[in-house]
Amino acid sequence: MINVIGLGYIGLPTALMLAAHDVEVVGTDYNQKLVDTLNAGKTTFKEDGLDELFAQAVEKGIRFTTEYQVTDTYIVSVPTPYDEFSKKVDACYVISAIKTIMEVAPKGCTVVVESTVSPGTIDKYVRPVIEENGFVIGEDIHLVHAPERIIPGNMIYELLHNNRTIGADDRAIGEKIKELYASFCQGEIVVTNIRAAEMTKVVENTFRAVNIAFANELAKICRHDNMDVYEIIKICNMHPRVNILQPGPGVGGHCISVDPWFLVGDYPSLATVIGESMKVNDGMPDFVLERVHDIMKEKGLTDIGRVGLYGLTYKENVDDMRDSPTLQLLETQKKHLAPGLKVYDPFITDDVVDNQYHDLDTFLHDVDLVVIMVKHNEIKENMAKLESKVVLDCHNICPLDGVYHI
Image 1 (cartoon, helix red, strand yellow):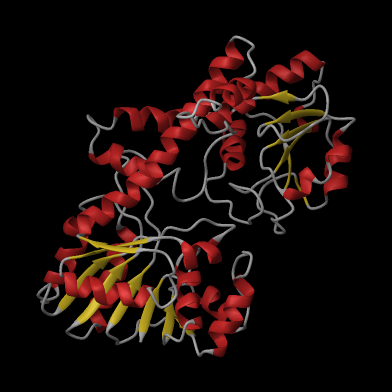
Image 2 (cartoon, rainbow, N blue to C red):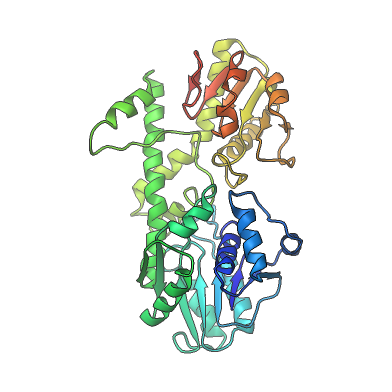
């Protein structure tokens, strides 16, 4: 039996995928409300194919509880934020999960950490907890790091098809866990050591963050001298060895906006390009707010309350708001003590911010300036409704004349 610890955006789909492929699974989470929701037959977030996968897993016998199980394999999939001051990984949730596992773990079991961590985290934080409980690593307890590699909006497909990395002290244990993931994973599964697995996951997200920052910095440079960044990127990308990404209003989620900081925190004198790139990305919501100010001045708009932000999530066509650029922008706006901007997102049905709307037409009726923060399919399909509005398009998706860009 596999006990999956943490039933969030990564743990739940992993637990369901294993169960749907005939692996006995018990999902554990400290959140009683979340567990009750799952036991009532409902998923806890929206994702294409998740409800169908949930039904398959339930049919195969998956169970959900707040209790840790006595079993031979644990998969830890809990959050790993970073410390705001030091930028180092905050391993408190991983440490807590490992401590609780040690209270019930039988000798010979394997603990798999799926949570993304900085290189050396398992050595620094996980091994001591295990040893303090009287276990000998490699004999009584086996350690593995198997970082996830999926993205909201395409989770089910990527769980099935993405390549995976397994880091283990013991090659034989690594191969055993590789077989477990191969029960559903059709991609290549590479077995390496734990520190290499830790590093590769952080480096993957750092690569993406740095490249996004380059595009965002280009946008700022081009805005400064009134050049069309999209035209420039298009032409540059005609070069066979150039592939510049598109700029945007910022970076959110729990990977690209977080993981690179682990390297900055651990290697502050070495990760200088990474650190500056993260500052560029983190500064984009403020840059968008400055653009709103400039556009209002140019168009003679005086009421900030007639400005509407389209999109609350961190990416298109999902309900995941973690660290979204819109939330970052709203936080900045609050610091200036300005009246609240209006906000709407078709994927967020609960009231989570002030001045939030739940209908596109009503939202558009009450605003003069629309800022497209997220490129949901809904807005792409309703561009004609923006014809009478001033539009700041942060993603270059609006075909209307007179549209402003970042």
